[in-house]
Length: 123
Image 1: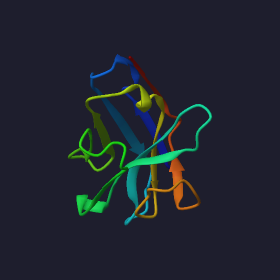
Image 2: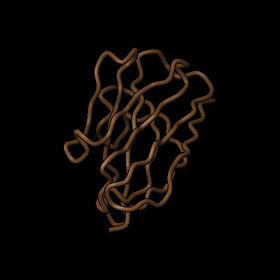
Image 3: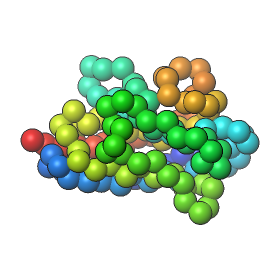
């Protein structure tokens, strides 16, 4: 059974930084992308960033390009999201996910979800 557990969320002022972590346990299908989604109150869940197996390709949503960086640890089961220059519009619940690449759209391609970690950015 796959389990994804996020950590690292919190409250920060605009311009600040946070680093989210995701620990994956269980067997994740070879070829799956790993990534991050977020959902703000009253809004649809949106893809933030995704990484292909072995880091072959990386996807970023337009709203986070140049500010967020996705990476994997030396251990395959670790996923990170470095978030810099945070703005209030980044306030959301952030979810770790695994599924079919490119993993940028919320839908049936996402096969595994974490429980989420809250990020709040104040102005």
